[in-house]
Length: 270
Image (cartoon, rainbow, N blue to C red; front, side):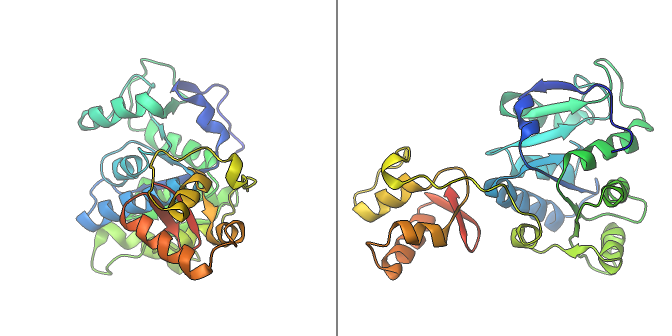
């Protein structure tokens, strides 16, 4: 960014700034399906290893933070970190202060005023490796976030909407202008590579909290952790079993909610 804030005020887990981050933003007057999609894709991308960044506004921003609560999320406020807006997000704000991060470039006690909201959008873009836009109208602040992202060469992803819905005119326009079509988490993972962490040998992996009665299930859970693991790598490390055995067991563990698949070739502990 050419206008980096000289100071960032932070509450709670400031170490999250070291993680790979992805912005998920959109309209305040969001539809039922827009909110559901924002939660689902936020959960999938945070499970895959991204820290989700958004603005703690009502609508899509709120849903994006909620989807990442079991993993990691960062809220960028327009006012001071102790000045929540809107107040309807008070419970979510308190949850963010438990295990996540709230930041602002404005000093504490600064009230959020209209001109500060567009300003904070550049910080959302500056933190992120890419920007996902869900339900943005023509005059949406999310389009400004996308513009800031384009200025620093970030990939932009936009969820398509019904042509008659004014809430999606802006995001549809982004797709026309060359943004990546956003239908699922894999659309993002195909474009942005997460840092690779070396796989741990099975005998050195931390024991899973869930205990299984059969040996193969337990070996899978001992190998998988909260960092995404490729199914291909798992199959190599479990080569003493047949591929069919491993894949069937993976499906059984997924049905038991012991593991989660953010994409076809990635698995993490649920």
